[in-house]
Amino acid sequence: MTAPADEPELPGLPPEEDPAAVEARMAGLRVVEAMLFAAPMPLSEADLAARLPKGTPVRALLADLESLYAGRGVNLVRVAGLWMFRTAPDLGHLLREEAVEQRKLSRAALETLAIVAYHQPVTRAEIEEIRGVATAKGTLDVLLETGWVRMRGRRRTPGRPITWGTTEAFLVHFGLESVGDLPGLEELRGAGLLEGTIPPGFSVPVPRSADELSDDEDPLDAPDLLDYARNDGEEG
Image 1 (cartoon, rainbow, N blue to C red):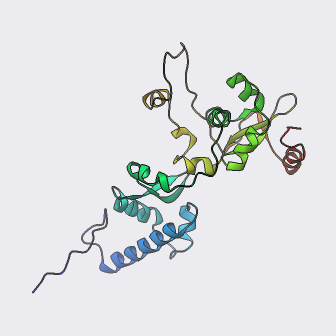
Image 2 (image 1 turned 90 degrees about the vertical axis):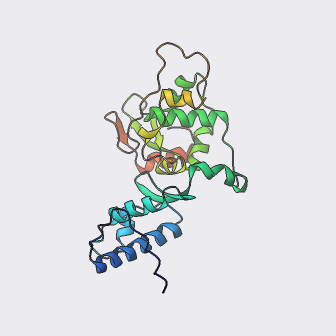
Image 3 (image 1 turned 60 degrees about the vertical axis):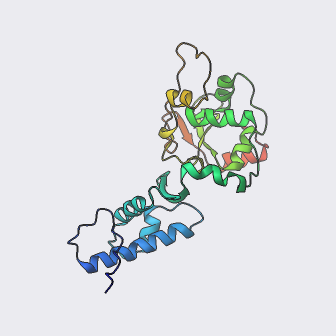
């Protein structure tokens, strides 16, 4: 008589746990896995909990799934406080030929995006000061269209210029939990993004929170957004 195949073991599951509890946990895992697989966007723990019985340990189920998918072709990852399945980093190059690139960002747009990410909250004038050149009309509009930057607020200085910051979509696209996970100076040098002799005193700033307004910012209101649209991207 052939012995039955072993059941897959859940990470961190005590061997003496009640069979009914094991069955309930397996059912919860299947629901969470199915929701994450089918969702077009990353999901929060609250999104998942809403579809599960009250009291289900969602965080523990996610930890189990994260362990189960570790080392596989698809990994469960947490980005911007949300959960999603993503191709394993070492296999990404195999899929690049299948990806459809809808638009390439110009060098000016990429530089502007990097400045916004590392220096937020930042104004257009501050972006121009850091780059050393005027920001071409439409550069920030292109980044707005990608969904990677947003108007945060207005600086409490004369003229009340608009401040810019990154979005949740920026974190998701680049696989970051927060802007604090952006690479630092040594990581950038190791990746070959900073070559040659670096000037004395050069440093890569530690980004501030992308969510909360700073002490020198006022929140935007609906008229601010309408004025920006009416002025064709010119700050009023």
